[in-house]
Image (tube, rainbow over all chains, first blue to last red; front, side):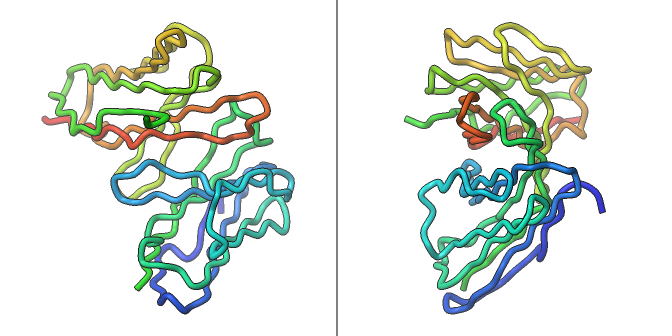
Length: 114
Length: 113
């Protein structure tokens, strides 16, 4: 596979469920990102990882828990979500995490919380 | 005040015409500016990046940056139906701010044959 991949592509979960989103990048990058995209709203940066170290947590509720075991993989663990968390969750990567770098996005996971 | 502002549109453009998209940002120390295109149901993909004042051209696309006015624009020449998408303006402070992009809500462009 090439680029940035995300699984699952669609997810429906109840408020009491626990699920995880997976992102994998095949670009040799060292920085990875989680974004949330809600309808009619700008993309919101959630987390930034550089060389497996979290460098940004953009005031995200604790019901979202990121994990970056290596520079190619990024997870977002979900538990006790709310209906307003329903959104498109996008993963991205960039070479080193610098401000001038292009970020390459995965296809996203469409999440519906019932 | 929103950090990055764009007109939501839709911007209706006849095929072959020029589409002009505007973006303003509030943080004066912003260093890097990006235009992403997002087709419905797809993820964003980079169209242009610009870091210095002035114009930058790439094929049918021209980005224009004016840091004094805190304004960045995108022109699409000879618009094609395949250009119909939402265009996202993104701004990064650069330096030690990592890749913390601030996105606008996007401008929907509809190119009519």
